Amino acid sequence: MAELEALLADLDAESADADRLVADLPPDRWTTPTPAAGWTVAHQIAHLLWTDERSLLAATDPDRFGEALQEIATSPDPLRFVDAGAEQLAVLPPELLLSRWRETRAKLRAALAAVPPGTRLPWYGPPMSAASMATARIMETWAHGQDLADTFGVTRPPTGRLRHVAHIGVRARDFAYAAHGLDAPSEPFHVRLSGPAGDVWTWGPDDAAQRVTGPALDFCLLVTQRRHRADLAVRAEGPDADRWLDVAQAFAGPPGVGRAPGQFAAGGVG
Image 1 (spheres, rainbow, N blue to C red):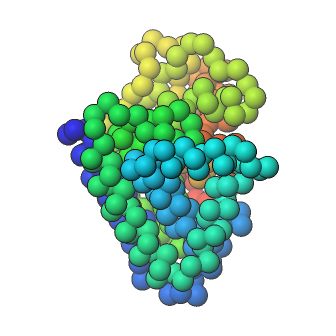
Image 2 (cartoon, helix red, strand yellow):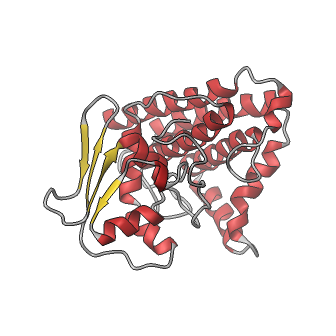
């Protein structure tokens, strides 16, 4: 439970960082385009709200979530439902959209804290623990917060919460290959990242032939596709690791279009 509480505290902090970027935004600026094609500031918050609402449903009423999941599975275009959810909520008045997101994320925090240990929550992929769901919410909130920061020309100081984003990026290696129609390598990779406090984060065996190294911030920007690989100081050793950096993604669903080389300042700042 201590691990879950720490994750929920990090989710609170990540949500608060994104919230601060829009808290005092005039209503007319909520229609400002963001780097995500076709999405405004309102779409970014609407997407976070929609996903938090779905997470809350999974944590509090798994049967209803299962019914909603079945509806999606039988729809003619199941991949459109995420974008459709954001589009429906983005038309809300900004003050209502923001207040509803604040209320929902508070309810989600309480719901995840109350999930009995060992419980698996239903989701659009494999069922997950409350801790895994909290980690996924941190990753997505950070990524969409980056979109907002890039929209407003704000540089966000990197924090230790990036470790959660990096962890999902590493764990999603095989999914990223599959999403691009590729077979994942059978051998493990070694990933070594420098954290923002000067510490070192590692995954995989130290003697692995396939290796990825670099700043944690840059790796997180890569796996969330908020920067092009050419603009980041993430390096690969070995052909399989090199291929992974071309297709890496920490999020579920089909591959995104990512960002263009040179679209932002190099080195992982927005």
